[in-house]
Length: 445
Image 1 (cartoon, rainbow, N blue to C red):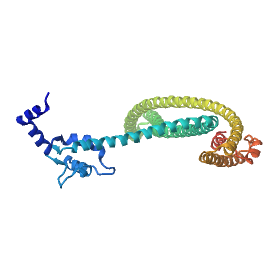
Image 2: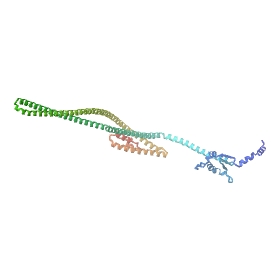
Image 3: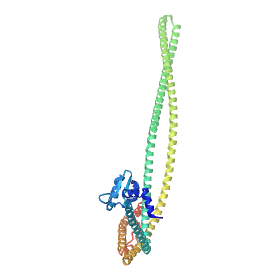
Image 4: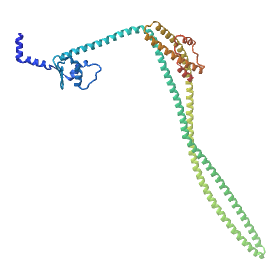
């Protein structure tokens, strides 16, 4: 292959001219999005984000391609959809991109290597501190569990008190409601009973009055009849005697006849009066019959009232039965209360044993803090452990004071162990049993 002839052929074909023209103008091009995605890592840190792609490309490429500007000409030109680069500008950008990628790679390698070294050193350090850390963790978890147990017991106690209050309030409301419902019926029954008794008394009084009036009238009629018959017979005897007598006495007999006529009129008048009395007796009997009918109706009403009274009596029996059931429930609740008191005593003994365990924990904690202060070289760790120990000691003192106050208020509680005073005067003291739990147990007892 002869290079001279090849170059002549290319020159004659115009290829050399085309390449020369392209190299003298803008031989390389990229679209806007591709340019931003490829060279965005070269943007200076702390720069503002620009949404417009053309403005973002200008903000990105101007500081980077400033050394490639020659005779006031930029190393690139921005089109509508693409970016055109002069000869060598794109190669310069690629070199700068490779340099930036190398910096980022070194930075990431530094982070990962430092992470692995820290992890290795931390594992060795934690292995050396593992025994003491386990003791501290167990003690701390024990405190958290006790606090949660205390909260749950308090919630349970409050729920029981609330349930008892609701039960008492419901019983009171039921008693008021039942009394309100039964009271009008009972008053109505009393009113009906009094009305019936009053009507019975009135009927009895009327019957007595009618009977007395009838007896009086019958006696008067009989007496008048007897008196009239006696007078008539006396006049008849007198007339018979006078007829046998002298004719001279005929005049007298005529007068006696007039007297007899008058006595007949009197008898007729008495008969009329008797008829009137009989009519009045009939009317009184009719009134008595109507009163009997009214009495029968009242007796029926009394029977219905007695039926309602029996229904109310049955309801009262049911209420008595429910009351007996409630009394049985009260006895059962009393037995449960006795069981709860026994459980409370066992819990108090458990809390006292727990206090002794806390004293042991406190002594071990004081030993741990002493050994850390003597042997540990990490000042920050020593300071953190001492702060934690002081916080635990302050909490223990506050709980101890609360426990002392509860023991003064409840002398029947078991005394605290004597070793607590001696250990608290030394380095660090463990917290006593939770005062609030003792308070709750005293309240229950």
